Image 1 (cartoon, each protein chain N blue to C red):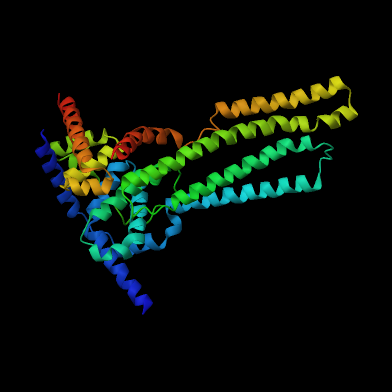
Image 2 (spheres, each protein chain N blue to C red):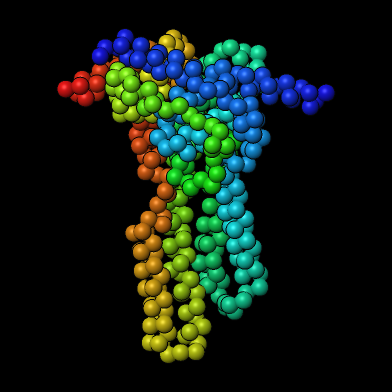
Length: 209
Length: 171
């Protein structure tokens, strides 16, 4: 089958599509009216929910810094919570960028520049996601040590150390299991990696021009 | 007055979608395999077209922007999220996207073409679709965002790839 035959096969398909039943006007109108049901709107809603949760966490951390509910004596005890706050702020920035990405005008730009923009955003986010994971791990591990001074006041050195090592080990195991189960892996990554490979070729083409 | 204008615009838009529904069907069939995904993509493309409609109203005969919107939607943010479970697909019973395989069964060449295109990458699918639609190199370059010479080179590679795939499946 040569290319001309390919074209005529495609034209047969095209003609058959033209003969297909027209789409009811009501359906098209409902598609443009019921915007909230579209996939992009759903992603926006999910991102909105996540943003709200992160804000609540930030408020909670603010309360920890202001009210000192754990009776911390040294500033260094706040360090894990500061890491957590930084992680949350980073996640908020990533969400904001994602939101902007979804808002890119899809209609006035060609595929190349549109994808280039998306790749740039994803690449920047990938860096941020890596840092986010590391900050969360540091925060999770260090939180255990924030309570060490309390333990040293009430228990012997040996008991206090054991009492710190056990939760630390549990934390590390939990992070390890979560890591192995792919909790830190961006679920969109696999499909995206394929695209990226191909799009990098396209980007090279675009750069060459 | 405003309402009347809006109604008129909706009517024009509906007419345009129906005149060019083949373009959207083809893009949906190229990029989605599951019926629900196709319908979801169809809705997303219609939404994006509706957003762009006021600015492109005057050139509604020019289909290039339709291809551009449809392909941008299919390749970019839509597909990345395709594993999200869907609650309800719009008017499922009343709305059918004619699948290429319906016709492929009665036409061997179409069947071969369908199988070969499925093996191409997303960008290659877009380029070959525009080629098969008899778009000029210039139009393909504008829609995809490549230079004219790049379109030529890529198209040649894709054609060779398609021929190879077809030969392999024939043998």
